[in-house]
Image (tube, rainbow, N blue to C red; front, top):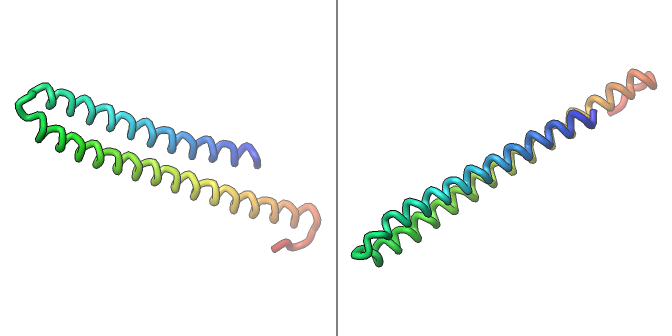
Length: 101
């Protein structure tokens, strides 16, 4: 029973970690592309502003991905807890011969 919960929590952690990894990759790629663009010094002012907008947009997307993963992990934990509670109630009913609500 607790191993099921540990497995689900481990899976939820993997989801969150994968979301964080993806977000970091997105940010790294954006910075790399921004750096390439900024090598052309004649457009530095305009490009700096565009880079900042792009980084802000990517940062929002990364946060959204992480929040979504955390919500998924939370839902998984809640589901596990409900299933464990149901299992314990059924097991108690079987062992004690009484109905538990």
